[in-house]
Image (cartoon, rainbow, N blue to C red; front, side):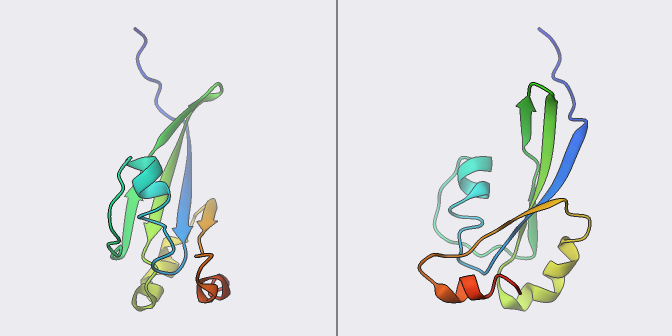
Length: 104
């Protein structure tokens, strides 16, 4: 059996949005990265998850930075965006204020 190829391509992906928009509980982190689903627990500061996707061009690693959405962490959060190549911006379709806060 061939050894697993180490990812040569890596991207820093940042998940951003207000608290309670589903960054941790309902989207990437719990459902797609860890296959878990649980009740809402606020992310403190940042969590990094490193999934590897195997493609016909070789493995690609995404360092997914799940940032805290609460306003009290806003100053810290901005520093996590440095050198990010991509982002997923989350809002809650049942809460217009989370959509209005997207530019922030």
